[in-house]
Amino acid sequence: MNNITTYYAARKNPFLWLAALLSLVSAAARIVFACQVGGIGVMAVVVRVILPVAANLFIAFRLPLRGEKQFYVTIGPVTVLTAYMFYAGHEVSPKLTMTLLCFMVCAVFIALYALTFTGKIGSKLVVFVYYLAVIGLVGYDKVLRGFLIRLWPYNKPLFISDAAILACGLCLLLCVSRMPAPKEGDPYRLRWGDRMDGRRVRNMPVMSKLTPYFMSTRCTRSNYIADTIDITNMEKYIRQKRKSGLKHFGITHVILASYARMICEYPAINRFVAGQRVYHHYDLAVNMVVKKEMNKESPDSSIKVKFNPEDTADQVYEKFNTALEKAKEPGISNGFDSITTAFDLIPGLLLAFIGWLLRFLDYFGIMPMALNEVSPFHGSLFITSMGSLGIPPIYHHLYDFGTVPLFIAFGHKYTKYELNKDGETVPHKYMDYKIVTDEGICDGFYYASALKKFRSIMNHPEQLDNPPEIVIPDID
Image (cartoon, rainbow, N blue to C red; front, side, top):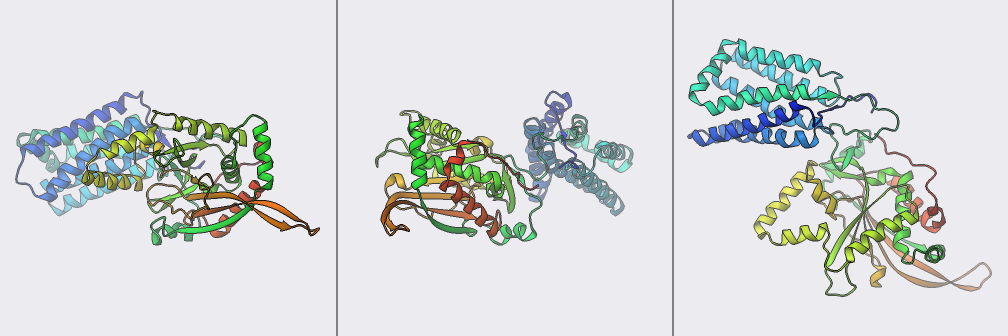
């Protein structure tokens, strides 16, 4: 990470807003051109209108929103616009030498732009100088100069759009600045390949990198684990917590706190697979389906609670119960309820398209974060209590949509009478739980070690009263 150069574009920089404005001007002018000109083929419409407009709009909106943290998001649209400029030059001057020259100029610029703003080149000076050379070539060469002059009387909107593209590119280079090298303890900086909900895990073993390509869905990568735990110590711990004032403290809180503590030593369990790549969640977000009232008529809702791996059992209790009580308040809808109500109003065919669009956006990590925050399909863990329903746990499938890599279901308590070492019959209370895992995030040995740690913490929950001694970060 220390060798990675990162760039940002501050919102207070006037060139950022000028670049966004020029992008909108270019898109608007190109739409006017499309409305005025008829009789062009499908390929020309795609290359000369649809792709440039999409790239311009992407810059216009993503640059102000994400430029300070993810300036590298401009690499894609700038590549599209540069490829379009090559196409435009070739269209007017189809001579082989000029075509090769234009292709070489565009290819080198795209490569330099990508290498610079992914952090592999430590200075933007080389791409800035090369961009000035590109503008000089466009202005100097008589063929390209003739292209621009001849285009003006032919179609002014297209000329304005192309000129705005060139000016926008220059403003992009003027608004971006290099960030100083990170220091120990600085927050993680987003890099090329990271998502808004997780950072890319780049140094995984090769086999782990290839697994998502051959098992492309989370369901096909699912592994199923069943276990039983003696909850004698857990129940003593729960009674102590209730006597100390946490009157609703229960098994759910112990499981959640044990899970968070396990993540301290086994951070890879908090990874997820998206777009056939493995990422590490920035947050420790737990989802759970709840009912406002325990009856058949009461509708389901969903809560999402964010924890820190360092949280104690008391902190887990406070965060979880705050979210649970808010969800159960009569007449109050949370974000999940509002979204599902809105989706229910959409006609079926349109809703199917929206579902496809959300899966497409989620694949590339560009789904709106507002949806991610309320989605039960996105998070670190999904937990369900079958015990509150008085039934054994189930193997609950993982969702192919979203990012949840782990599903835990635990059942009701039951008693077994067993012989102790003195030959006496004594009662023991047990609880069954089942876990479904995504094997794409780590190997089986790692999973086994982590789940043994999870079980050990639940067997000795008193350690959850204190913060963890160590917190191991995930690999880069």
